[in-house]
Image (cartoon, rainbow, N blue to C red; front, side, top):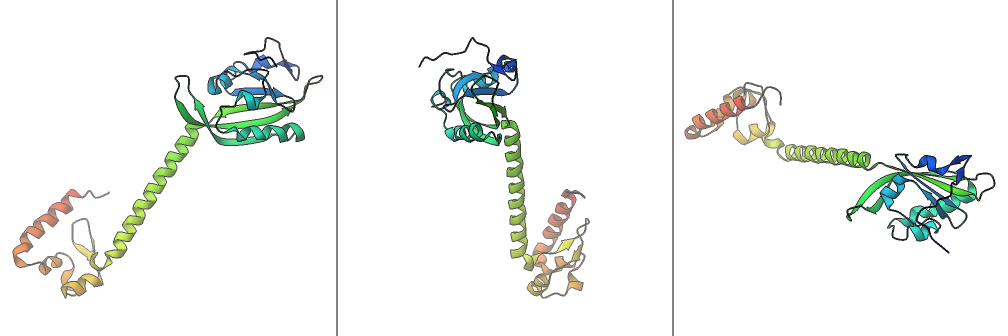
Length: 222
């Protein structure tokens, strides 16, 4: 079998030459027959997956492709005529500068049967790497927020014995039974600034100053 880098003959698809797909912004590939002989690749497809030998079965032409399982979809599409779409499929490709990277594509695979020609399969590949990356980033942020909230809830749950609530001015407006038990003071004595009275007299002035500074540094809306 002879191989060529690019066919010079115009292959027809529903009365139109395949070359109409040359400037398309998405990758277009056509293969013919049960062996899926590679017949056409447009510029976008070659830019993504590299130039491949026309006239070779796709499994041989893409022998270096890591995720070759997608090629198994060609057989049922050609046999049954039912189109298949694969969304956000990961593909490991080698870039023009030699680096290997993982990118994502949505593939549309459908059967073609132009009059007087051997039936084949049309593959359209649209890159969705940016969309997948953005979605993964959003999921990562959401998971980080969820974990942060969970850590906060766990902290509050394990610290409930010593938690109270103050107003924007730093006056206690809601206490806790645990703090009352720890200090031996009823809530009526702790509310407002009364809780400062539970500190040792030598520490009271410094504690009041530190609390006042902390209250001033917290904005009204956080």
